[in-house]
Image 1 (cartoon, rainbow, N blue to C red):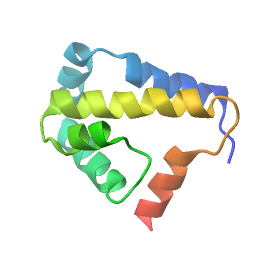
Image 2: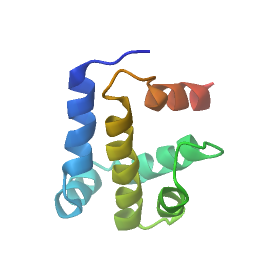
Image 3: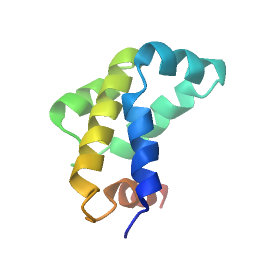
Length: 97
């Protein structure tokens, strides 16, 4: 599945937003706990995360969770900008089923 260049820009914007800015915004909207839970569900049994990223995502600590998800997101963009498969969507769709 191909994605637009705007998708990569959107993912990088998240990955490059400093935690001191991102975490208060996500808390203010009430979405931080939801985002953390969804990423835990999405990564369960999924081999796309490194062991460090998996540990960070499972930590329950917002700062560590954000580091893990941003690390994965940056790596995903680097690996897929060249037109490779969209594993982000594949993982989300598989876990939604």
